[in-house]
Length: 119
Length: 111
Image (cartoon, rainbow over all chains, first blue to last red; front, top):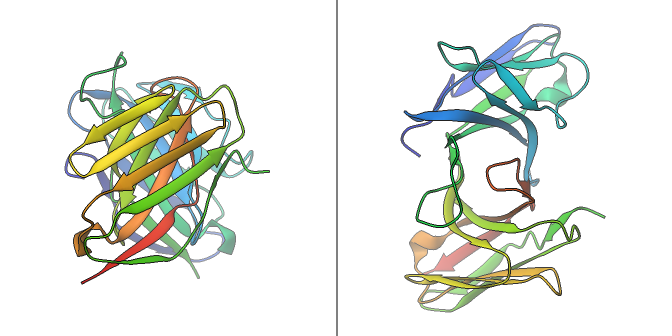
């Protein structure tokens, strides 16, 4: 999974604090996706962003969660006033712009995730 | 009903066996189908992707899609202990857009 960098790898927060998760996409990739993975569950889509735009946030909880992908710098997933239920692994994926069908290009490259634990 | 269903396993097979992993889905609008492998504490790694129905082969891996029955499969030939991982299927309506993942099947290949 070299290329998509997520940090921190592990993050511990107390209830009520804020959590910031960062994702640097692969070089040349302008599309970023955030997923959440709970134990024994598959990845759940949260949000899809391009530079300075949120394209699809249908999987984001309505409150406390926000995401951005600024013109410069990494994409940030921000969780305010964390609760125990926010404990999960959060994965970021990136893909190139305008990728077509066919060929050997991977549609989404994933990072190794940030494991968030809420005390 | 979940959009993508997958038997969570665990599935244990001896080294050299042929492994069959399967998913079913409910949304007939899905056109893109992917299989990812995820090792413990790592991110998912794409193994195969297919568009619409048909077969695709890559080395020891074969992916099959049957859109008429909404059934997708991944076959692993000559399985190795290094294949031990969780295998996730994923479906999408449009290429590059958010994927819907199954819960994953945990596979153990015993030496």
